[in-house]
Image (cartoon, rainbow, N blue to C red; front, side, top):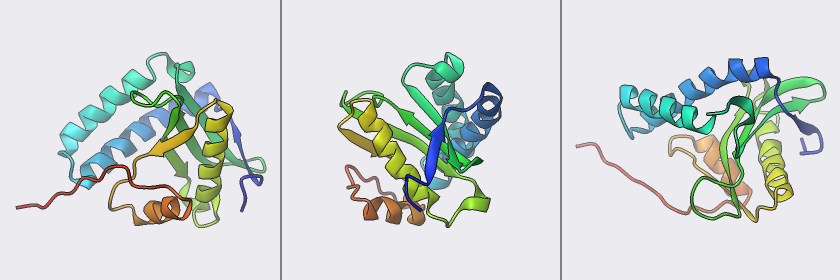
Length: 159
């Protein structure tokens, strides 16, 4: 699978309306599963962050959202901030790469990261950042193999 075999297309309004609550719930779940906060606090944070980022709906400034397409079949989502919120004005940020479960294991995740890099460059960005939770070993391995470097690391020990 190469980025040439996977392409991006803007979502329809209907697709966006179906995706947004799922993305918010997945974000809350990831926060809670990381141990960063309780499920209730994670849900509140996810709701506030999502509302702020998509305050104007699908066309919200700085939010770049795509369907991942393999031929004519939607296989996932790519969500970028261009530029990233806060910090380096020439860095884009990957908020989410989602490959539908039925299409995982086919190289679409790797191709999606390469498409994210291409999209960031097309917007004049010179770097691309992302977060990955410690328990997501598959994603961490992918990002390592593509040359991403750890910028910060949080650690915790339950007592």
